[in-house]
Length: 315
Length: 221
Image 1 (cartoon, chains in turn brown, purple):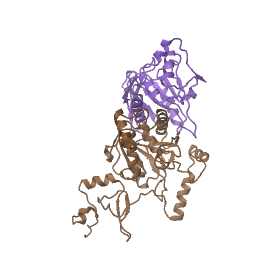
Image 2 (cartoon, rainbow over the protein chains, first blue to last red):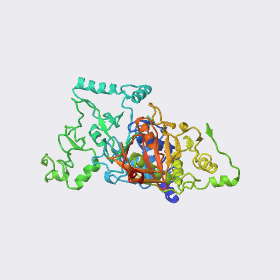
Image 3 (cartoon, helix red, strand yellow):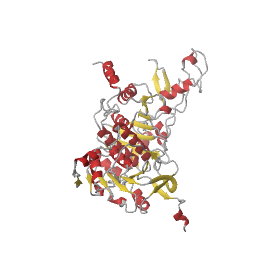
Image 4 (cartoon, rainbow over the protein chains, first blue to last red):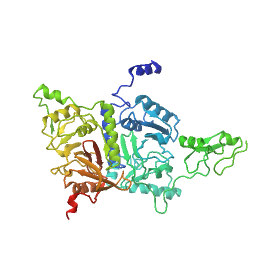
């Protein structure tokens, strides 16, 4: 049966079946909703949940999809990003999944979204009150690579024994001269639980601190849900003499001239040519729509002048 | 021990119990959950919640709707003395929620109680362990009014500066018991206050500071 025929059947029925609105059955949603409420009540604590098999493989965001499916309703507007971009495979397919299974509006504009599902980035535009950001998490346990036994890590969280994590950060400094963790940089939530913010670049860690939006984290394979309520202290671990620092980029975005944003490297040829562009595609497009230009914008290459400190390349 | 309530003395009773469930349960429970999630994420904010559930007294229709949204066969429910022996209510819950009703408060995932004077102590409910603090009860406390008056000044995660809240009627022992509960973090119970048309939440992370209520009993001094 082609998808067009399926679509015709759905159109005939007027709507998808209510019972599996947003794919999951109601009992599963209740179980996940209970885990979400406890997660909010215990910020940073990983609540076990009975993760379901989803129509996509582990690693594609089954945890995030289950959380989104349990909170989303017909009034929501969904944005899905994959490393900041709305137009990559993971983002496109999850967005299409919910457009079909929950008939929700979708958007690429951060400000318009009520629910944002993300694979590892927080949008550049500050989130506002009432928005929910859902993170896809591969390995929720920040202590897992230090202590493989769940029984032990559970005890360590229970008694707030986080010395091992500090030793790990110290060893980084001793061996490499700096804390060599660029993503999944551990944070302490509300002064209690150490939490893995998913493999988000540490550039985004400061955005988690006292965010106006509710942050929910879903790990499908590892069967954990956790949360950070709005206006909650989220502190990246560091030392007095080696304070936490985010990445800095030397040049602005080549397309929109944006600075103080997280940039992706794009290889242009096999001669070493490369450019750096905003990882947040919506932010970059919005800036360009407002007339901002980077050094490699098509019209800059034609002779107009660019934003930022780079001069237009001579064409 | 679970208490089943198959005291269907007549066909009428069972027919009555089948009435008054959530209309469009999938969408209504989604809306109710989102209000609950927002209320839990922003403690003390008062969320208007609409429902067409009709449950036998003295359970408020909104309490029944929250139970129908959140509870099921996996979650034991405890009812306080004002509700536990009402056969019609037990029948309604059995049919629409399907949760086992339990006698021991600490066996319950959800507990429904009236906020009045004879409220059982918070510490009688499951607080979870240090290793699994999520295995703790959520209390649905039925009250008449929720107002943003400064009886309480709330602070903690989810609250930008402070949030005022006034709950009435409420046992005079509640605040002292809540302070003990708050100190247990990460263990503890979480509370959902349910008024006829609104809800407000107190997760265990929320600290209550007594404000200066404008009510008359304060001016007597």
